[in-house]
Length: 282
Ligand code: AMP
Image (cartoon, rainbow, N blue to C red; front, side, top):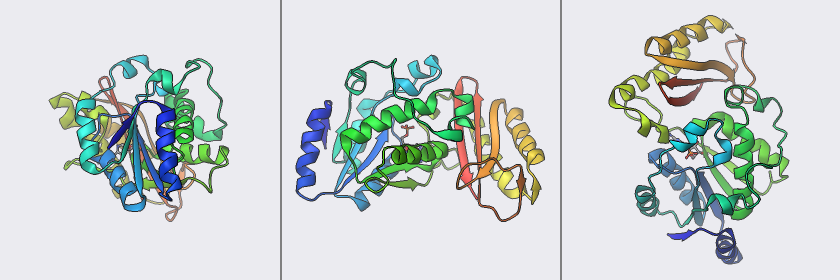
């Protein structure tokens, strides 16, 4: 695996590969890697000649500065993991490299209603920060294929929109990879490292609440079911931001399910200081 810290070096290296006719797959991350991240590397390796990953804890997407400061950094484990998975290139930029002009004046992306629902509502500015960093990374890596996790369902939709705003729909193909879970159902997440043993045991309730919705949904209004799923989480000590049922295609909130519409159930909740999110497409 070749490691680059400077975008110009990365760019020159990848240009040579592209001239040789190699296709480039890209899986951006914020590090503290787990098997979920590695599954993206594997999906890229199966499809592309060259697989690039990046590790960058992006300051502009944290609406809560404490969350940014406490974001786990485990580079000494991440690098061997990527190498073992057969990742070809790791991009490890500094904040200065990503934002040479600073982080105060960023472009604005017109994300429409996606910006203000679900994660957007509870994390103001979050998706603008995601777009700022992903836009820059895509310009630097210029991948043919982009590998994202379904774990961040709304983020996948936002990035799809970003690629559209970049007029790059033909050039960059998105692959949404399934969420990898721990044996008890908890979605793998870098933030799980911040849970103490007692919290870790309780954390599986977020998955249980999604399964509860899946098993109990009937055609008609969805509010009662969402309230019950919320109560399940509260009983376990979660502070719930939302449990929502939305159209799987465009994420519009489903107030009344018709019994056939493909939907996604999404939840976000705090266990003490740690905010966890998960979803299930049904
Ligand atoms: P992050 O490092 O959390 O920014 O995530 C980097 C990428 O890995 C994103 O596309 C995530 O959606 C994806 N990812 C995170 N957790 C999982 C998981 N449990 N299974 C599959 N992909 C994941």
